[in-house]
Image 1 (cartoon, rainbow, N blue to C red):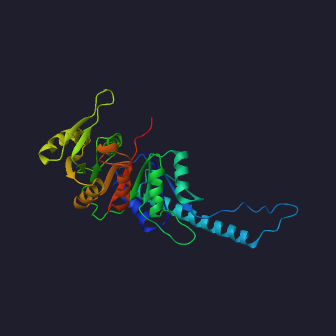
Image 2: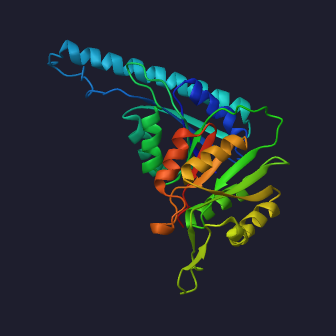
Image 3: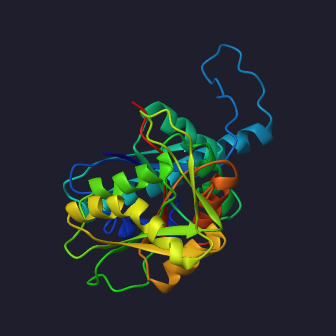
Length: 310
C-alpha cells in the first residue's frame, strides 16, 4: 500500500502518526512524507557570469527567505520520517520538502506518485511564512484528489480498547468501496464495525450492474419497514464478519451528515469511513457534500474512500 502523508510539525500532524497505528494498515506499506514551505521562490541568481547583473535587495531577501523555509521544511520532513520509522519499523519511508502552494503540491505529488491513500491532519499551523495543513487545504485536497483521503485526528480513547469503525453506507459504488477497504485492512482482534444507513421516506435499490432492470423503490418512512433495509445491507455486514470483524447494521432517520456525526460520537468511533460520492438524485443518502461535512466536523478520524481505478 502506498501512502502520501502531509506533515507540517503541528500537533495535528503528530496526531496523524498515532492515528495510523489504529488504521489497520499492516506492515507492507510504502510511505512518502511531504512537507511544503508555502513561499514563492524567485528564479535563481546566476553568480557565474562575466558581468553579473545587479540583483535588487528585495529579490535577494526573497531567495534567503525561501532557502530558510525550505531548509526548515526539510528538517521537519526528516524528523517526521525518523518518528514514523520508530513506530513502524517494517515500513519503507521516504521524505521530501518543496516550496509551493500546499494543496496543489500534494495533489500534484499524488497525480505523479499515485498513492492509494493521502493522510493529513485536520488542521495545522498558520504562522507567517507558510506551513502545510490548514482546514481549507485539507478540504481542497479532499475534493481534488483522485485517491482516498484520510483526515486524521488523535483518538480520545485508550489504546487497549477495541478499534471501532463506523461506515456510512447507501448501496452506491463508493460506499461499497468503503466496505471493501475496511475488509482488506489488517485490524486487531475484537475490532467492531457499524454499518450506518440513514433513511428518509423512500429508498432506491439499485439493480445489479449485469442486469438491465428498473430501479426498485421501497417505503422506509415507517420503522416497521426497516427490516427491508437491514436485508439489503446484511450481506455487507456478513462480508465484514467473514474478514474477522464484529459487524452490525445500524439504521437511523434524518440528515445523513448529522446522523453520521452523532452516531460516531455516541458510538465512540475511532474512524468514520464514507464513500466520496453517494447515489444521485432524490434517492441519495450520501453525497459529496456529506463526505465533506463529515470530514470537517467529526471528532474522530475520517477516511473518504474512492474506488480504485483498474
